[in-house]
Image (cartoon, rainbow over all chains, first blue to last red):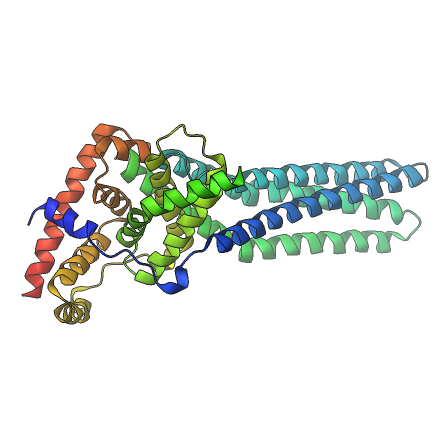
Length: 201
Length: 171
Protein backbone atom coordinates (compact mmCIF):
# COMPACT_ATOMS: atom_id res chain seq x y z
CA UNK A 1 0.00 0.00 0.00
CA UNK A 2 1.52 3.34 -0.90
CA UNK A 3 0.47 6.86 -0.13
CA UNK A 4 -0.05 7.90 -3.78
CA UNK A 5 -2.72 5.19 -4.17
CA UNK A 6 -4.45 6.48 -1.07
CA UNK A 7 -4.31 10.02 -2.44
CA UNK A 8 -5.82 8.94 -5.75
CA UNK A 9 -8.58 7.07 -3.99
CA UNK A 10 -9.25 10.10 -1.77
CA UNK A 11 -9.48 12.53 -4.69
CA UNK A 12 -11.95 10.40 -6.62
CA UNK A 13 -14.53 10.29 -3.83
CA UNK A 14 -17.93 11.78 -4.58
CA UNK A 15 -18.29 15.23 -3.15
CA UNK A 16 -22.01 15.87 -3.01
CA UNK A 17 -23.41 17.21 0.22
CA UNK A 18 -26.78 16.19 1.64
CA UNK A 19 -29.72 18.14 0.27
CA UNK A 20 -30.31 19.92 3.57
CA UNK A 21 -26.97 21.67 3.22
CA UNK A 22 -27.29 22.85 -0.37
CA UNK A 23 -26.30 26.46 0.17
CA UNK A 24 -27.93 29.03 -2.03
CA UNK A 25 -26.57 32.53 -2.49
CA UNK A 26 -29.81 33.98 -1.15
CA UNK A 27 -29.40 31.97 2.06
CA UNK A 28 -25.82 33.23 2.39
CA UNK A 29 -26.84 36.83 1.79
CA UNK A 30 -29.67 36.52 4.29
CA UNK A 31 -27.40 34.92 6.93
CA UNK A 32 -24.74 37.61 6.42
CA UNK A 33 -27.29 40.43 6.57
CA UNK A 34 -28.81 39.03 9.75
CA UNK A 35 -25.34 38.80 11.29
CA UNK A 36 -24.52 42.40 10.29
CA UNK A 37 -27.86 43.68 11.56
CA UNK A 38 -27.44 41.91 14.89
CA UNK A 39 -23.99 43.44 15.44
CA UNK A 40 -25.15 46.88 14.36
CA UNK A 41 -28.27 46.75 16.54
CA UNK A 42 -26.20 45.74 19.55
CA UNK A 43 -23.76 48.60 19.00
CA UNK A 44 -26.50 51.16 18.51
CA UNK A 45 -28.34 50.02 21.64
CA UNK A 46 -25.14 50.07 23.65
CA UNK A 47 -24.19 53.55 22.41
CA UNK A 48 -27.65 55.00 22.96
CA UNK A 49 -27.95 53.45 26.40
CA UNK A 50 -24.54 54.77 27.32
CA UNK A 51 -25.40 58.25 26.11
CA UNK A 52 -28.76 58.31 27.91
CA UNK A 53 -27.20 57.17 31.17
CA UNK A 54 -24.42 59.79 30.94
CA UNK A 55 -26.94 62.56 30.30
CA UNK A 56 -29.20 61.45 33.13
CA UNK A 57 -26.40 61.16 35.65
CA UNK A 58 -25.02 64.50 34.51
CA UNK A 59 -28.44 66.05 35.09
CA UNK A 60 -28.64 64.51 38.58
CA UNK A 61 -25.24 65.93 39.43
CA UNK A 62 -25.97 69.43 38.11
CA UNK A 63 -29.36 69.52 39.89
CA UNK A 64 -28.28 68.28 43.30
CA UNK A 65 -24.55 68.86 43.72
CA UNK A 66 -25.07 71.95 45.89
CA UNK A 67 -27.30 70.06 48.29
CA UNK A 68 -24.94 67.20 49.01
CA UNK A 69 -21.35 66.78 50.15
CA UNK A 70 -18.29 65.05 48.77
CA UNK A 71 -19.68 61.47 49.03
CA UNK A 72 -22.35 62.40 46.49
CA UNK A 73 -19.68 63.78 44.14
CA UNK A 74 -17.52 60.67 44.63
CA UNK A 75 -20.56 58.52 43.89
CA UNK A 76 -21.21 60.33 40.60
CA UNK A 77 -17.53 60.19 39.65
CA UNK A 78 -17.49 56.47 40.39
CA UNK A 79 -20.56 55.86 38.25
CA UNK A 80 -18.93 57.73 35.36
CA UNK A 81 -15.75 55.67 35.80
CA UNK A 82 -17.86 52.52 35.77
CA UNK A 83 -19.50 53.55 32.55
CA UNK A 84 -16.20 54.38 30.90
CA UNK A 85 -14.78 50.99 31.96
CA UNK A 86 -17.94 49.27 30.68
CA UNK A 87 -17.77 51.17 27.42
CA UNK A 88 -14.09 50.33 26.83
CA UNK A 89 -14.75 46.67 27.59
CA UNK A 90 -17.76 46.68 25.27
CA UNK A 91 -15.79 48.18 22.36
CA UNK A 92 -12.90 45.80 22.92
CA UNK A 93 -15.35 42.87 22.81
CA UNK A 94 -16.80 44.29 19.62
CA UNK A 95 -13.31 44.56 18.06
CA UNK A 96 -12.73 40.89 18.85
CA UNK A 97 -15.87 39.97 16.86
CA UNK A 98 -14.07 40.82 13.63
CA UNK A 99 -12.34 37.54 12.94
CA UNK A 100 -10.12 37.15 9.92
CA UNK A 101 -10.44 33.59 8.74
CA UNK A 102 -8.11 34.30 5.82
CA UNK A 103 -5.03 34.77 8.00
CA UNK A 104 -2.53 31.95 8.29
CA UNK A 105 -3.44 29.32 10.89
CA UNK A 106 -0.57 30.53 13.10
CA UNK A 107 -1.99 34.06 13.14
CA UNK A 108 -5.55 32.81 13.56
CA UNK A 109 -4.65 30.61 16.54
CA UNK A 110 -2.63 33.45 18.11
CA UNK A 111 -5.65 35.73 17.72
CA UNK A 112 -8.02 33.18 19.31
CA UNK A 113 -5.60 32.74 22.23
CA UNK A 114 -5.46 36.52 22.70
CA UNK A 115 -9.25 36.64 22.67
CA UNK A 116 -9.51 33.87 25.28
CA UNK A 117 -6.87 35.59 27.42
CA UNK A 118 -8.93 38.78 27.28
CA UNK A 119 -12.07 36.88 28.27
CA UNK A 120 -10.21 35.32 31.20
CA UNK A 121 -8.95 38.77 32.30
CA UNK A 122 -12.47 40.09 32.05
CA UNK A 123 -13.75 37.47 34.47
CA UNK A 124 -10.81 37.43 36.88
CA UNK A 125 -9.86 41.14 36.92
CA UNK A 126 -12.30 43.57 35.31
CA UNK A 127 -15.41 42.11 36.91
CA UNK A 128 -13.79 42.74 40.32
CA UNK A 129 -12.95 46.35 39.40
CA UNK A 130 -16.52 46.83 38.22
CA UNK A 131 -17.93 45.28 41.42
CA UNK A 132 -15.76 47.43 43.72
CA UNK A 133 -16.63 50.61 41.83
CA UNK A 134 -20.32 49.76 41.88
CA UNK A 135 -20.22 49.02 45.63
CA UNK A 136 -18.39 52.28 46.26
CA UNK A 137 -20.89 54.28 44.23
CA UNK A 138 -23.87 52.70 46.00
CA UNK A 139 -22.30 53.12 49.46
CA UNK A 140 -21.53 56.80 48.83
CA UNK A 141 -25.03 57.40 47.49
CA UNK A 142 -26.71 55.68 50.44
CA UNK A 143 -24.44 57.56 52.86
CA UNK A 144 -25.56 60.89 51.43
CA UNK A 145 -29.26 60.26 51.15
CA UNK A 146 -29.47 58.84 54.70
CA UNK A 147 -27.81 61.91 56.25
CA UNK A 148 -30.93 62.75 58.23
CA UNK A 149 -31.77 59.18 59.21
CA UNK A 150 -30.86 57.25 62.37
CA UNK A 151 -27.51 55.45 62.60
CA UNK A 152 -29.31 52.10 62.75
CA UNK A 153 -31.18 52.80 59.53
CA UNK A 154 -28.07 54.14 57.82
CA UNK A 155 -25.81 51.24 58.73
CA UNK A 156 -28.57 48.71 58.03
CA UNK A 157 -28.97 50.15 54.54
CA UNK A 158 -25.20 50.04 53.97
CA UNK A 159 -25.10 46.48 55.31
CA UNK A 160 -27.88 45.34 53.00
CA UNK A 161 -26.22 46.92 49.97
CA UNK A 162 -22.88 45.33 50.88
CA UNK A 163 -24.42 41.92 51.47
CA UNK A 164 -26.32 42.14 48.19
CA UNK A 165 -23.26 43.05 46.13
CA UNK A 166 -21.04 40.47 47.85
CA UNK A 167 -23.76 37.81 47.61
CA UNK A 168 -24.36 38.35 43.90
CA UNK A 169 -20.61 38.45 43.23
CA UNK A 170 -19.87 35.23 45.10
CA UNK A 171 -22.85 33.41 43.59
CA UNK A 172 -21.93 34.48 40.05
CA UNK A 173 -18.30 33.56 40.65
CA UNK A 174 -19.15 30.10 41.93
CA UNK A 175 -21.71 29.27 39.25
CA UNK A 176 -21.66 31.06 35.90
CA UNK A 177 -18.09 32.39 35.94
CA UNK A 178 -16.66 29.07 37.12
CA UNK A 179 -18.22 27.32 34.10
CA UNK A 180 -16.98 30.07 31.79
CA UNK A 181 -13.45 29.78 33.20
CA UNK A 182 -13.45 26.00 32.78
CA UNK A 183 -14.55 26.40 29.15
CA UNK A 184 -11.94 29.09 28.51
CA UNK A 185 -9.17 26.92 30.02
CA UNK A 186 -10.28 23.94 27.95
CA UNK A 187 -10.35 25.92 24.71
CA UNK A 188 -6.99 27.52 25.53
CA UNK A 189 -5.43 24.10 26.13
CA UNK A 190 -6.80 22.82 22.80
CA UNK A 191 -5.48 25.82 20.91
CA UNK A 192 -2.06 25.63 22.60
CA UNK A 193 -1.87 21.96 21.67
CA UNK A 194 -2.91 22.73 18.09
CA UNK A 195 -0.37 25.55 17.86
CA UNK A 196 2.37 23.30 19.19
CA UNK A 197 1.63 20.44 16.79
CA UNK A 198 0.59 22.39 13.72
CA UNK A 199 3.12 25.18 13.82
CA UNK A 200 6.06 24.59 16.09
CA UNK A 201 6.48 20.88 17.03
CA UNK B 1 -19.17 45.94 -7.50
CA UNK B 2 -21.49 43.54 -5.73
CA UNK B 3 -22.00 41.66 -9.01
CA UNK B 4 -18.24 41.31 -9.40
CA UNK B 5 -17.97 39.85 -5.94
CA UNK B 6 -20.81 37.46 -6.59
CA UNK B 7 -19.18 36.33 -9.81
CA UNK B 8 -15.87 35.84 -8.02
CA UNK B 9 -17.61 33.89 -5.28
CA UNK B 10 -19.40 31.66 -7.80
CA UNK B 11 -16.16 30.98 -9.65
CA UNK B 12 -14.27 30.19 -6.44
CA UNK B 13 -16.89 27.77 -5.17
CA UNK B 14 -17.24 26.07 -8.53
CA UNK B 15 -13.49 25.50 -8.71
CA UNK B 16 -12.90 24.54 -5.10
CA UNK B 17 -16.06 23.00 -3.69
CA UNK B 18 -14.79 19.44 -4.10
CA UNK B 19 -11.52 20.21 -2.27
CA UNK B 20 -13.36 22.03 0.51
CA UNK B 21 -15.74 19.11 0.90
CA UNK B 22 -12.91 16.60 1.05
CA UNK B 23 -11.16 18.68 3.73
CA UNK B 24 -14.37 18.58 5.75
CA UNK B 25 -14.59 14.79 5.37
CA UNK B 26 -10.93 14.45 6.39
CA UNK B 27 -11.40 16.57 9.47
CA UNK B 28 -14.73 15.17 10.63
CA UNK B 29 -15.68 11.55 10.22
CA UNK B 30 -19.43 12.06 10.71
CA UNK B 31 -20.94 12.95 7.30
CA UNK B 32 -23.65 15.24 8.68
CA UNK B 33 -21.25 17.23 10.85
CA UNK B 34 -18.88 17.44 7.88
CA UNK B 35 -21.76 18.95 5.90
CA UNK B 36 -22.31 21.52 8.68
CA UNK B 37 -18.63 22.42 8.54
CA UNK B 38 -18.81 22.69 4.75
CA UNK B 39 -21.71 25.11 5.01
CA UNK B 40 -19.84 27.16 7.61
CA UNK B 41 -16.75 27.36 5.36
CA UNK B 42 -18.85 28.54 2.41
CA UNK B 43 -20.38 31.21 4.65
CA UNK B 44 -16.94 32.38 5.83
CA UNK B 45 -15.73 32.57 2.21
CA UNK B 46 -18.77 34.68 1.39
CA UNK B 47 -18.05 36.97 4.37
CA UNK B 48 -14.36 37.27 3.55
CA UNK B 49 -14.76 37.92 -0.15
CA UNK B 50 -15.36 41.65 0.40
CA UNK B 51 -11.99 41.95 2.17
CA UNK B 52 -9.98 39.80 -0.24
CA UNK B 53 -7.11 42.01 -1.30
CA UNK B 54 -5.25 39.55 -3.49
CA UNK B 55 -2.14 39.59 -1.29
CA UNK B 56 -2.14 35.80 -1.04
CA UNK B 57 -2.88 33.40 -3.91
CA UNK B 58 -6.54 32.52 -4.21
CA UNK B 59 -5.92 28.85 -3.39
CA UNK B 60 -3.95 29.81 -0.25
CA UNK B 61 -6.71 32.22 0.75
CA UNK B 62 -9.44 29.57 0.33
CA UNK B 63 -7.54 26.86 2.19
CA UNK B 64 -6.73 29.23 5.05
CA UNK B 65 -10.41 30.02 5.47
CA UNK B 66 -11.26 26.31 5.33
CA UNK B 67 -8.62 25.30 7.90
CA UNK B 68 -9.36 28.17 10.30
CA UNK B 69 -13.09 27.55 10.07
CA UNK B 70 -12.45 23.88 10.85
CA UNK B 71 -10.37 24.90 13.90
CA UNK B 72 -13.15 27.23 15.06
CA UNK B 73 -15.82 24.60 14.38
CA UNK B 74 -13.92 22.06 16.45
CA UNK B 75 -13.56 24.50 19.37
CA UNK B 76 -17.26 25.20 19.38
CA UNK B 77 -18.35 21.59 18.89
CA UNK B 78 -15.99 19.76 21.21
CA UNK B 79 -18.56 17.13 21.98
CA UNK B 80 -18.41 16.01 18.35
CA UNK B 81 -14.68 15.33 18.39
CA UNK B 82 -13.99 11.88 17.07
CA UNK B 83 -12.59 9.65 19.79
CA UNK B 84 -11.01 6.35 18.93
CA UNK B 85 -13.31 3.52 19.95
CA UNK B 86 -11.98 0.72 22.13
CA UNK B 87 -11.24 -2.47 20.18
CA UNK B 88 -14.41 -4.33 21.11
CA UNK B 89 -16.55 -1.45 19.82
CA UNK B 90 -15.04 -1.64 16.32
CA UNK B 91 -16.99 -4.76 15.34
CA UNK B 92 -20.07 -2.85 14.08
CA UNK B 93 -17.75 -0.92 11.74
CA UNK B 94 -16.35 -4.11 10.30
CA UNK B 95 -19.86 -5.40 9.65
CA UNK B 96 -20.67 -2.22 7.76
CA UNK B 97 -17.43 -2.53 5.82
CA UNK B 98 -18.36 -5.98 4.55
CA UNK B 99 -21.55 -4.66 2.95
CA UNK B 100 -19.91 -1.90 0.89
CA UNK B 101 -18.43 -2.15 -2.57
CA UNK B 102 -14.63 -2.58 -2.66
CA UNK B 103 -13.83 1.00 -3.70
CA UNK B 104 -16.21 2.56 -1.22
CA UNK B 105 -14.84 0.17 1.40
CA UNK B 106 -11.32 1.36 0.79
CA UNK B 107 -12.40 5.00 0.90
CA UNK B 108 -14.37 4.59 4.08
CA UNK B 109 -11.43 2.68 5.51
CA UNK B 110 -9.18 5.61 4.65
CA UNK B 111 -11.64 8.13 6.16
CA UNK B 112 -11.82 6.08 9.33
CA UNK B 113 -8.02 5.88 9.63
CA UNK B 114 -7.72 9.63 8.99
CA UNK B 115 -10.22 10.24 11.76
CA UNK B 116 -7.97 8.29 14.13
CA UNK B 117 -5.22 10.87 13.69
CA UNK B 118 -4.90 13.78 16.08
CA UNK B 119 -6.74 16.97 15.17
CA UNK B 120 -3.67 18.98 13.96
CA UNK B 121 -2.55 15.97 11.87
CA UNK B 122 -5.97 15.70 10.23
CA UNK B 123 -5.71 19.33 9.15
CA UNK B 124 -2.31 18.78 7.58
CA UNK B 125 -3.13 15.46 5.92
CA UNK B 126 -6.29 16.96 4.42
CA UNK B 127 -4.06 19.44 2.58
CA UNK B 128 -1.56 16.73 1.56
CA UNK B 129 -4.41 14.65 0.13
CA UNK B 130 -5.37 17.70 -1.92
CA UNK B 131 -1.91 17.70 -3.50
CA UNK B 132 -0.82 20.91 -1.79
CA UNK B 133 2.94 21.36 -1.83
CA UNK B 134 5.00 21.67 1.35
CA UNK B 135 5.44 25.34 0.52
CA UNK B 136 1.67 25.86 0.14
CA UNK B 137 0.96 24.08 3.40
CA UNK B 138 3.59 26.15 5.21
CA UNK B 139 2.00 29.31 3.80
CA UNK B 140 -1.52 28.25 4.77
CA UNK B 141 -0.61 27.25 8.31
CA UNK B 142 1.98 29.97 8.89
CA UNK B 143 4.56 27.35 9.80
CA UNK B 144 8.05 26.90 8.30
CA UNK B 145 8.63 24.55 5.41
CA UNK B 146 11.10 22.29 7.24
CA UNK B 147 8.70 21.69 10.10
CA UNK B 148 5.92 20.96 7.62
CA UNK B 149 8.07 18.43 5.78
CA UNK B 150 9.02 16.55 8.93
CA UNK B 151 5.46 16.62 10.20
CA UNK B 152 4.00 15.34 6.92
CA UNK B 153 6.41 12.41 6.79
CA UNK B 154 5.42 11.44 10.33
CA UNK B 155 1.72 11.72 9.55
CA UNK B 156 2.02 9.68 6.34
CA UNK B 157 3.88 6.93 8.21
CA UNK B 158 1.25 6.95 10.95
CA UNK B 159 -1.61 6.83 8.44
CA UNK B 160 -0.08 3.95 6.48
CA UNK B 161 0.50 2.08 9.73
CA UNK B 162 -3.12 2.65 10.75
CA UNK B 163 -4.34 1.44 7.36
CA UNK B 164 -2.33 -1.79 7.58
CA UNK B 165 -3.23 -2.35 11.26
CA UNK B 166 -6.94 -1.89 10.57
CA UNK B 167 -6.68 -4.18 7.56
CA UNK B 168 -5.09 -6.89 9.73
CA UNK B 169 -7.84 -6.50 12.32
CA UNK B 170 -10.45 -7.19 9.64
CA UNK B 171 -8.95 -10.57 8.95
